[in-house]
Image (cartoon, rainbow, N blue to C red; front, side, top):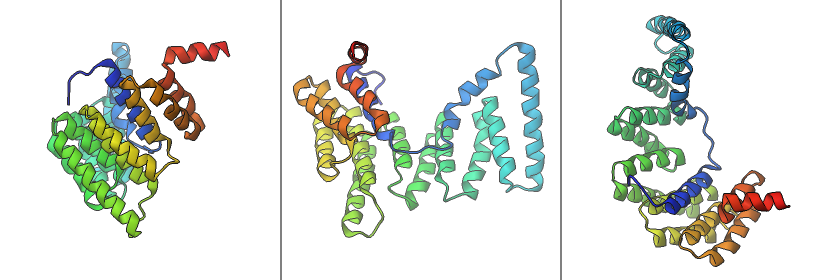
Amino acid sequence: MKISQPKRTRWVYIGVILMLLALISFSILPLVSSIAQEARVLNGSSSESTQAEKALETRALGYQLVLEREPDNQNALEGLLEVRLQQGDLKKAIEPIEKLAQLNPQQTDYTILLAQAKQQVGDYEGAIAAYRTILASQPTDIQALKGMTELLLAQNRGGEAVSLVQKTLVEAIKDKAAKTDSVEAVNVTSLQLLLGEIYIEQERYSEALAVYEQAIKSNGEDFRPLLAKALILQKQGKNAEAEPIFDRAVALAPVQYKDRIKKMALGASDWEKKARAN
C-alpha cells in the first residue's frame, strides 16, 4: 500500500469506505480497535494503574483455572479475552480468540477478529489463513473480503486483491442470475464497491468508474455507487458532472447519511456556512 497520497485522493478513498461500510453490521470487531483505549485507561496514576493491573491479572488467573477444568467453557474464554484486551496484550488475546473461533465456526465475527488480531501482531500469513477459512465456506462474506483485500493491499499485493474480488463478483452475479444462491442485490453491489475501492487505492480511476456504472445500472436504488462515482468526478475536477449525481445519492440515501453526503459534495466548511445561513 502506498505510504502517502494526495489529500484529495485520500478524501475520495475515505468517503467511499464510509459509504461501503454504512450498511455492514459489525458486532465484536471494535474490540481490536479499542485495545489502545483500554490500555490507556490503565495508565492513570501509578498506584491506580498497579491496582488495576493486579485486579485484571487475578481475573485472568480465575478464568484460566476454569479453562483447565473446562477448556470449552465459552463464558471463561470470553472473560479471558476481555481481560487480555483490557490489558492491551493482544498476543495473549489470540489464544482465547482462536478457541472461540473453533467453537463457533458459523459465527464468523470471531474468525474475523482473529484475523485482525494476527495482523496487528504482524502474523500476516496467519491473518490471511483466517480470512480464507471464512471465504472457503462463505465466499461472498463482505467483511472477510474487505479484511482480506486490505491486508493484501498493505503487502503490495494489489493484483491478488483485484483477482479475488473479481472472481467472487463474477460468481455472485452468476448465482444471482441463476437463482441458485440467496445473493441479494445489495451484496453484489457491495462487491462492486469493494472492487472499485481497490481500483481507487491503486489510482485506477477509469476502471473504478466503470465498476460503479455497472452497479448503478444493476441496482439503481442504492445510493453508494452514485456517491462513489460523484466523488471520483469531483476528484477529477468535473464538478458540473458530479453535482447531479450527488443530488441523486442524497435523495436515495437513508436519513442518517444525507448530511454527510452533502458535506462531501460541498466541502464541510461550505456546508456548515450554508446550514447556518438557513
